[in-house]
Image (tube, rainbow, N blue to C red):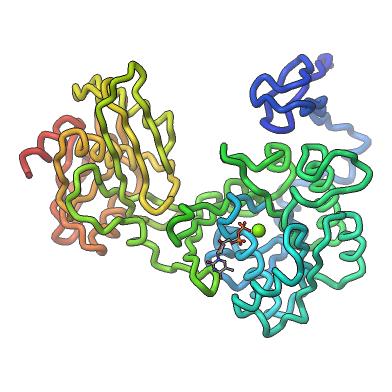
Length: 451
Ligand code: TYD
Ligand code: MG
């Protein structure tokens, strides 16, 4: 058997090394290095009896699930909460995590489930006043509330209660007394999460942990928690607008493609069943805007991309991307520079997806490039045009999946002209005018002519 070399891993960012460090070379956090567990080696004496064939496993029971009753939420989870599963809900402070989970508790309670809602951040009175605003009264006897930061006390109470769900709001504000560091520190977060995890598995009930996300977008003390839990959800959106997207970035019981869309109203979060038009600014023909269609799971969403291209006097032009991958933006800028001849090295480029949506759908490449081009040339794109396609390194427009689904959705929302990649077969979508291109450059030429 090959000798196992000890490896060390940073519990904050997941950086691995053969050497131990006092502070992580990648993220700079102190005291985050621990020995990494060796890979699992199957020991026959242990494995016997617990090993089974796939067909035996298939014949066994499926995980039993509890439906929350909030359709968008259940869908993101892959069809409701799995018993004994542990879910981390991440998001910036103030985005609506507590509101969402209180509504989840409310909906579950009205279906006869009992919930323990642990708020280590707010007093019971504060949570109650929010519940009042959200109109959660009906079965409030089913919701137990406690404002307590000592996790052992919390779990002791939980053991004595006949509950079907436990919510810990948040994992960064609870603590165990056996560890001396402050709440929110790595050792605390790790230990607390571990205990919640064991509790959920023992009792076979689902557990939710709220995790605040830092400015850099990571859940504090994060990588470790992501490995530990079964489901990682992110609640995201632009706090200045009312729309929020709930997304699974890890799900042991379902797909990670689905997104749930909510609207923050004065009565809490409301589901948005037809989210298409909410990611449009409604401004027609302003230079720098181009509309695209992204697929979120099964669902096409029409989104507007905005770009601002402004001259710079500095040797290193600025690039800023919101809702879009930064490295991808840099690559597209290089393609525009080299293949289309736009001298973006002398310009700052700011990019934004309207409504705070984040997407990594390759079909956004074309609208991103067109928005940049439109801003650079001060050329407004007609409001009824929509753009779909991936961009290759040669400046070519590459086909993407579900083109006709995307086009049908754009047409439904009133778009009449589509700029798309050239594909073998002829597409036909109602009276939509389809302009197909092999190269991005040709697409730009056509946009200038069609002005
Ligand atoms: P909250 O759930 O406290 O956010 P988090 O737990 O992620 O920090 O919600 C924060 C915001 O939501 C707060 O600024 C007020 C707003 N809000 C509403 O607009 N309507 C409502 O009904 C509620 C409960 C909150
Ligand atoms: Mg909160």
